[in-house]
Image 1 (cartoon, rainbow, N blue to C red):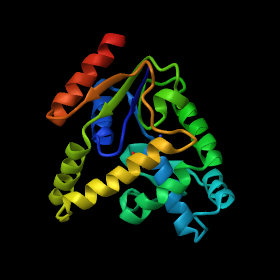
Image 2 (cartoon, rainbow, N blue to C red):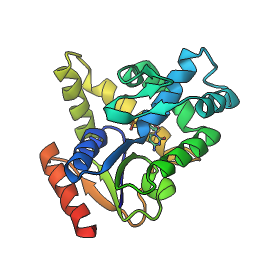
Image 3 (cartoon, protein in one colour):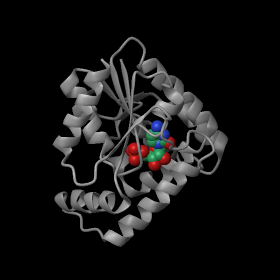
Image 4 (cartoon, protein in one colour):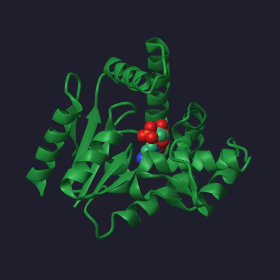
Length: 215
Ligand code: C5P
């Protein structure tokens, strides 16, 4: 069974999807980590982020290993580095690159073969697994998402300004939904779940209920 969970940045998709997969005994795929890993490798190799063929070349020649919740790129642990502001900013060059997307979509489809899978991203229900048995579009208002991000950073000892976070988030939302390849869109057969006012545990239980109904 394939479960796709798509939605905008900051809707809590990653941690929630991971826990849903764990509770159901499904494999979990964080596709955002793959786009981040490509951007990280481009920077590390000193290649030009704005050169499409160079970025595609890096994507096609690195080995991304997502086993055990870590992100290994050619054997180097990039788990923390791929979440840095620098890599977050740079990821759009990988995400808007047609050849990179074609390559990563293929890897994602291979990952979903013969396994029960919860996969999370922007295009999982629309492009990667259009025939998934269960599709969810997870969202929350921009203000709620920004509030959660500020709280999350604070819990890690980082002080962030709410308005700055909201501005950056609005920019990423716009980039994600206006991309010509693999844009963020709700699949017509996806269930939309707005998580405003819900605790992560409530969201997890709702999702498990939705998935169980389709099993
Ligand atoms: O989900 P996360 O914030 O880690 O994703 C990082 C970036 O990767 C997003 O801003 C988005 O542009 C891109 N992405 C994508 N397609 C996916 C998952 C993520 O383009 N399936």
